[in-house]
Image (cartoon, rainbow, N blue to C red; front, side, top):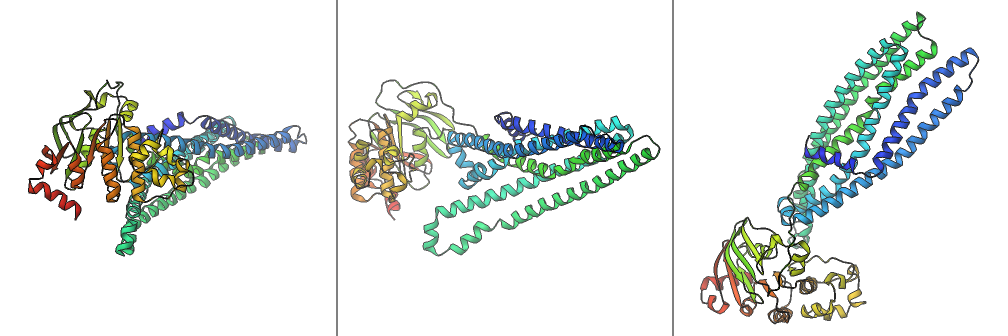
Length: 547
């Protein structure tokens, strides 16, 4: 059993009341359908004898139960699918956020959106499809039992046909699961290309390359069509095969029953009931739609399971002792970056400089445990970051990024508690004051430039981090005057927090207490800016950044 199948079974088990409602209505409806041929047969015999009695009322009651169960089942199927998909999406979102960098490194953003959207919805239909498919076994088993009571030889005839139908369905499930997986994979590829194109929409428009981008995004469409045609052909082939079995099966049962009627071993009502039970017994042939849905759900669950298999970030239970916020890297390396042994003294300002791709963002991520090192340990005030509880770690470290995502309903919520002071430190208070409701302005009603969003992100970092502030290219969109004001606030932080800044401008590095110079994924030098400035290669780093 694959991980996708285990995920589907878990969804059914934790599906709340809806799978149970589906099962009850399916079984009750199937039982009523089984009763219909019997009571009709009895009613026919009673009418022939001139004593219909209560059999006509029994017919009406059985049909009413079938209609009622079908109506409740339709409602329960929709509720079950919605509940299962929503539960799976919540779990998937929590897992992706818990996995952090590992998720976005392995899966493009468009892929994650597809798996959390379309694939989670497909997998969410598993309780409905499984219950509906299993419910078809009830009339099949019931028909076999009923025919055995009428005439065992009819049971053998029906059983042979059911075996043939099951073989067709088994082959259809295997083929469709594989084809549906390929179809969903191409959907994810197209979504990933589209998201990357939307990220660069302004560049594409400025370069006049929209036509080329459309071709690039839609390049996988022929493969998508090929998979779709394969699905259609598999469905058509299975429908033809099972469709041939059903009439042959009915003819065989009627032929055998007719001989028995002629010999007086069956009544007319029993022959009618036998014919109806043959139809009910072959009801498995109508499950192609349910089997196809189950195949798509299995393929989707397999794709979702790939994301859920990513190891989540494990947190400890320790809290930080009193301390100034000293950060220590001990023999640290990760993903092409070798930081070795490095110390950021408590309360100091450390600038990280280097060419593009040298590892500045990775070093910043390691400092606050947005990612874990492949080797070595990062400590904050003597405590390994991996041993800190999630709450303690996020309370201690504040992050600001180049393109911050603002979380919350209002400007104030996006910053955090007591937003006025950190907003002033980030030079965001002036433009916030011009908004209609100030800090209470909804984010959707506050259009902001890139620099204004960065200032809100900086304010959030100032409000959150109690011991360490990490600024990963967080001032790149600020104008020169604002950048100097923010830099001054950083270097004169009254709370004495340790600050780690990915710097691109000489002025920012000059204000730092020490500079970590990265070159080719290694620490080339550590020292004051004015000392490193004597090296032409160091000066070239800033010349490259400004060109």
